[in-house]
Length: 381
Ligand SMILES: CC(=O)N[C@@H](CCC[C@H](N)C(=O)O)C(=O)O
Image (cartoon, rainbow, N blue to C red; front, side, top):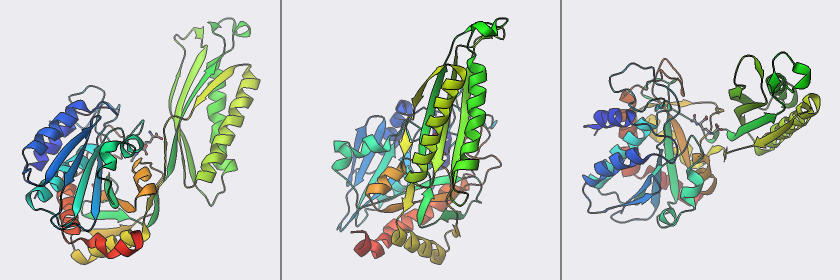
């Protein structure tokens, strides 16, 4: 079942590309797909993504599987021989593993015709700016729109052989955050003639820390992370601009509104306090990942009874996924796939345990071949 797939994963690992630029990745995937039996399979490209349709022998439903494709702007430090060949870019979120599993699933059902129709989506730009919404709006997707849809994400904190899942909310609502503070540059020795955006940025970033601590209900959850800060050109020049980039995570749309409102108030306050102006952009926003209860419970029972993996009923996480948009419109679920690594997602040394590929394929091929999802058909239709 996993024959040749470790090599495939290692090859994909070497060519990480950023969102909507996954061209080499797309070419690699198309080459793999072209070698599979084509009798009941059709392949369509959408931007650098791919939509595979596997016609069922006696379809009563159409089921979807989605993988993401993009890498991250991280300089890899794993030291493995198959490390990224694209300088400053890395599959630090496991999308190389996700694509390999999707290829394995496609190969299995290209060789063993499914009873129901299957659609395998290779979706670009999950890390940003978000490929799910435009893919869902495309004619190519509409032509094969599935009745149910599923996905996974590797989880370095769970051991290989474990699946982490829960019905209901699994991943948070997200919003990117891009802020420019604009003041007046000048000579370091004449601060009274300038308007220093390093100081303004530092005040704003410190003030933002009070939002979760002082404004969000302690029984609710939210995250405001500033992941990037850039200001100035030289140590003896007062900076005219500071650029602040981050992300907001919440477990409800209401709390997202509250956090954004507080950010805007703090920006107004910063502008007044430092006599500067600001530009604010919320970038890409992702809908929460909400697992349909009946499909999820049935999947959990199936996995437990099959003995193919162990099930860990996990808490919701503050990670985000644009797969949430698929789940907003189409019932299904996403699960964490245990891939034990000493370093977490987005870390330069993150290295998922490759054994998770076999675990995923054993579980998924059985789940789809046995049409376990059909138990919930009455509820999801
Ligand atoms: C699973 C995972 O790590 N997903 C990303 C999604 C990023 C969304 C967006 N670019 C943002 O930063 O808000 C995550 O960071 O959770």
